[in-house]
Image 1 (cartoon, one colour):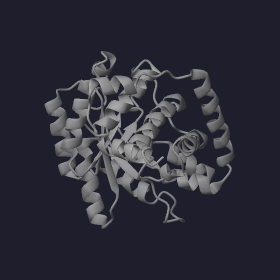
Image 2 (image 1 turned 180 degrees about the vertical axis):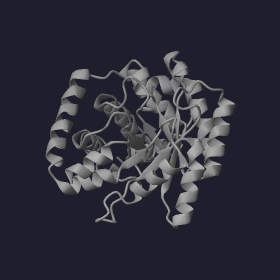
Image 3 (image 1 turned 135 degrees about the horizontal axis):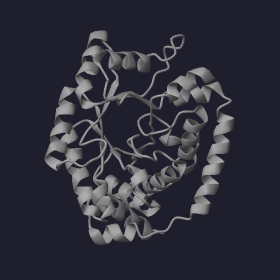
Length: 303
C-alpha cells in the first residue's frame, strides 16, 4: 500500500485539463447499458414521487432553479419582473429564492441596473456564444461572451458546436469551449451539450468529457430549443462523466438539466439522480441547477 498511494497521488496531481487525442479516446471507449440506465432512472422517478410529498424538498427545489426567459419579445419590464420573482418567489418566506435568472445578452444590462437600484445581489446568467444553434464564427462567440460579462453577467451558458461533435471532431469542441472559458474571465461557464442532437449516449459522454477537460464549471443538457431536451437518461451519462472527473482529479463540476422540466416530480427526479450518482455534496446551487420557466409555478402550487 505504501507504494500505491504516492503513485495515485502523483497521477491526480499530473492529470491536467488538456486534450490529448489518445488519452481522450481511451477515456471515452466505453459502452452504456440502456437497460441498466432505465432501471436507475425508474428508481429516481419513484423516489421523486415520495419526495414531492415533503414541502421541505419542494422548497429546496426552488433554490436550484435558474428562472429563465428566452423569448424574442423579452423586454426590460419582463426581465425586471423575473428578477423580483426569482429573489422573492414566496412572499411569506423571504429566505426562499431561486439560484439565478437567465436571460438573453441584450437584457443583462437591464437586470444589472435593476439589481443595483434595489441594492440586492443575485446571480445573473445569460446564454451567449451563438445560442442556440452554435453555428457562428468562434471570434463572434468570444466577443459576445466578453460583452455579456462586461454588461454584468456572472454566469455564461454557452452551447457546443454540434457540427464538430457529429463529425467526431472533439478537439474542436474542446478548443472552442477552452477559448470561451477564457473569455468568461471571472464568470462561471455552463456548457450546453444540446444532447437531443448528439444522436448517441456515447456522444453525450464524449461531449461531457471534452467540455469538462476545457474547464467548464457546469455541463448542461439542453438549450430548451431542441426537439428533445433534458432526459434522465442523458443526465445519468453526463453525471457519470462528472463522477469520473472527480475520481481522477478531486475537482467538482456542476450539472444543469434544462428544457421541458415543468412538474415538481420531474424536478425532484433530477435531485434523486444527483443524490444517488454524485452524492449529497452536489445538492447545492453552486453545483446543481435546473433551467426552467414554469417549474417555479408548479412548486408554488405544491406548497
